[in-house]
Length: 202
Image (tube, rainbow, N blue to C red):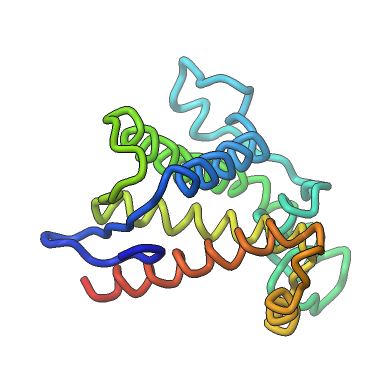
C-alpha cells in the first residue's frame, strides 16, 4: 500500500502516508484554497437563494494557474480546444458561460480541498501521524478532484503542456531548483492514477 491507493472492503480507498507526506499534501491543499479564494462576497450569505443565483465574473483570471483550473469554455486561453469561429463571438460566449458557472466550479474545488485537509487533520488529531488513511467512496471522489487540481497547478508552474514536457521532468538533474516541485508533481500523479484505478474497481 505505500505510495498508492488500494480498495478497502465496503468501498472506498486507503493509502499509507508518513508524516512528511501528510504535511506536503496538506500544505499544497491549503495553498490551493488560498488561490481559489472565498465564495461570492467573501463570506457565506444569510440568503442561500441569493448565493445560489449570484453571478460570477465574466473575465478569465489573470493568474496562469487559475486560468488552467478555470479555463475559457469556447476555445479561449486555458481551454482544451482550439478557437474556431469569430473571436469576438467566442469571447462573448465564454464570458456568459463563465458568469454562470465559475462560482459553482470554485465552490467544488474548495469543497474538494477541504475534504483533503480535514481527512488529513483527522489522522494527525488521532495521534496516528504516519498511518493508513482510509476514505469513503465520497471522500475518495473529493480527493480525486483535488489531486487533479494540485497536479494542474504544479504542472502550470512547471510549464508542462503535454506528455513530452512531462517526460522531460524525469531527466532533470538533482541540482535543478525545480526538482522538489517535480517530485511532488510525479508523486501526486501516482496517487491520482492509483485512486482512479481503485474507484473503477468498485
